[in-house]
Length: 363
Image (cartoon, rainbow, N blue to C red; front, top):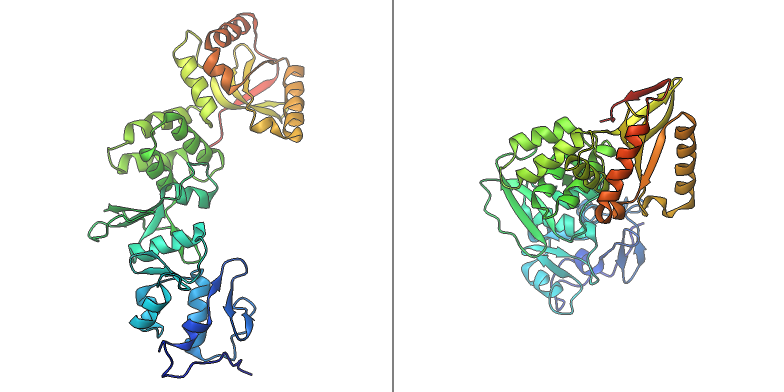
């Protein structure tokens, strides 16, 4: 049986379609709230008895998390007067961007901002930069800005939280999440790094992407070659470090320290095996001397389980005849001379550990 939602008469004060006056999206439970009928659950499949145009309106709002464009609202039966009524000051809807609304009164969620950005940017738009990094689980800067790639011929200005990037290299492939489209991981990383002001932040982004296997060094190199010159110097420098095995910002600082010292160049994130079994992956490794450096960040060792894992790995390495030096990211920045002297002394006394097989960093 169809639920009676109290359809207003055609001559009511605000002559707009009843479906817009009855329903509003609730991000907390993905439902439409109906003042007369309680909760009408879209995800629960309770729309089967509704008319096709009503089901389409419900699906649209559910799929777009309560965000819709002016064109979508008008095509679904709303009138211009009803839109003005709903986005008035104190009304039930909000205007997020020119021609884009959200059918809630609270603070829009991150996902709603991203959907609004795509509706504003138009067809064939793709999210890139930090917003896309979050989708892939890649470490990146925290920002409410949504960077969107659009075809070069499209005339669309950046507004509020949306930054428009016109490009002749619109991605031919992307990752979809409901109504959202995200640029491939390598493109998102390259676009993000070009906008970063600090090399440490760039190292964190690139290292995280490669370490988590979201993209390869070769894919990043292709993006570097195909992309714009602006901002490419930093990306090129960080990519060279990652090609050497660097996988984090702290490792990048250590890489720079070694490069400017008299120490021989180590292998970064080398994989060490003994009798076919993995001993561990060490941050820096000098195989000729059997010396390893482990960079122990407070972030990683905050949990007791992580500390226990480090202790077990240390015991396995030392039992195999490897000399392990532990340093912190802070010590790399504040005690570089002491670290260089300690490593130099260990290298002079060291020797290759018997039976240990070395493989380069993965990725």
